[in-house]
Image (cartoon, rainbow, N blue to C red):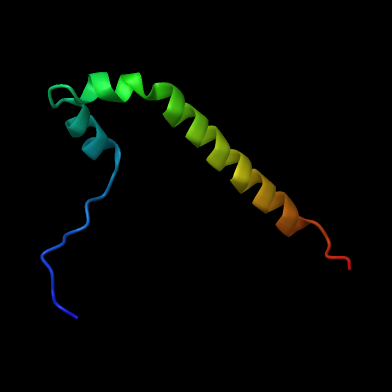
Amino acid sequence: MTDTAYQPVAHDTAFRQALLEKPGVKQAYDALQDEYTSLQMTLQDCETATNEVSKSPTTF
């Protein structure tokens, strides 16, 4: 496999804040806020459901 120069970037609070300070990014982010909120709620629901299933006894 070819070695690449890819360096992963942590998407932490500092990264998000720096990104939102760039011109136009905050406006674009705000325009998609409903979609981000919906996605976050869906992911939380999936996590909750997964946790509930793993706690329940297995019956066949």
